[in-house]
Length: 232
Image (cartoon, rainbow, N blue to C red; front, side, top):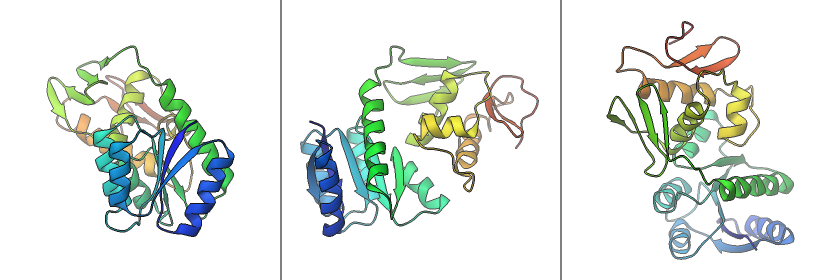
């Protein structure tokens, strides 16, 4: 039975979510503040964590960063009433794997929980190193370098760059990136994918003469040497 940690200080909502998870044959542990959540996540094994951002003692963002550093293999879904693009970017930067804005339907949360648990349970990469031109990514050490120079990426930037390295010299649409990196459908009303592409472009390309991350106008993005349609 999957073991879920639910971090939510609204006890009524916590009970409702817990009941929905239990109906899907999932075991649930409850925490009502960030300190208790950290204690439970550090000492017990969980298949997935669901956390609100605004919880007492330690907020969900700091909790997520701490746990992802300690146990990066545990998927995290963030629940929050904060739904702007900046809020979502902050959540993903903290290491969250998915983001659900309140109010939400229980069946959508359940669907996302199942997708994330399946993805993480099947994630057993045979190749520990990904390379393209002078970029090298070590999946085991969670590190990336270009021309031997270490580059620091946030967890979500790392996952985005990983997907591009797995699919070099192929145009990746925003929808494809959203579905494979964020496990969600692309919302045309937001630009968070473009924002993240710009983040990694600055870190990967800015200090090098030959640019590798390019935009294909109206279609998506491509990792390719010598591509002519690069847009700043």
